[in-house]
Image (cartoon, rainbow, N blue to C red; front, side):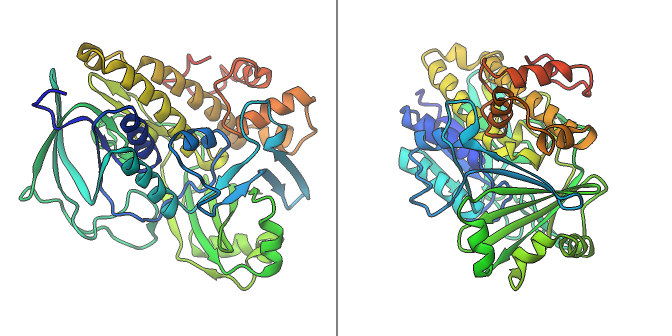
Length: 433
């Protein structure tokens, strides 16, 4: 490393994408520094992992069984108005991935991933805000300041709450590195605070969510053995129910009409016999909300930088693709960065991350296709709650639900992408095959 650089790689953001990238880069012997705006542990949604996450976490040295997280065997879809129900077990997917995933409390999960980065040799600082950044021929320069107390979280504001605090330049310091990994989330450090984001139309518009704690014995006996995520249809959207360790249940309402308020949540819960039964007697948290979350960064990489995780884009929570794409893309990106460190000219090339972008396009197009049809077509009637397709096609469907989307032998994935090529809004990943 040149004496003018403090680090080989600087990672902005210690969420799953940033922590994964930092861990794998540090394992390869690079000097890595992570700067996270918030202070951990902190609340975050994205609690239902996919089987595609498991091998990436294993490469990081993460053992989720040892962490006490609930195993997730599959996904259940319900329409309580009609009585329709379907169960998709990950064990029935095309071969290749583990037959399970996990349901995670993101506060402790993200903490564990940041600890893995530290264990691998990266430095990790919390409560640090990037005030400015600059990229030149020789590397990347960041101006860093302490995050003021009370500065709002990246997402999931408590309804009615306000953010406080403004970063001050008084305590600014400068860090230089040879390469920048932007894992800053929706704020988008390299996308100019989100100004490079293209909105993805036609998906869920807003979500409101809360936790129930102290579930009863009968509810926990129903939820814990398989740990499945439950997806319930409602007139203008859907509801998730995710069991978490220690007798907790995460419940979220996703609507195309705007963020549901407390009255909406109470009405939907009362109208669901299942949720009424599962949450009876449990304590509920405050309601949080997030809106306008479907976007893609149209400039996710360039000379000496790449955006990963939510800094690259986010589609919709319906198939739990967020963390799965974040971890898989972070692993792919890290391998490319490590290989490029043999030649500084490669690090400076604006096309270094084209393979990463192409893989990301496959992920976005696949999940966009399914989410768009979930909201605007009859995916839930024809596939999720309809008559089962033949065994191979069903296995292909489950492989997508498992996050196993970068394979050449999924006939179901190829057929659906081909059939919907001209139905979807034109987005930056439109040419992905």
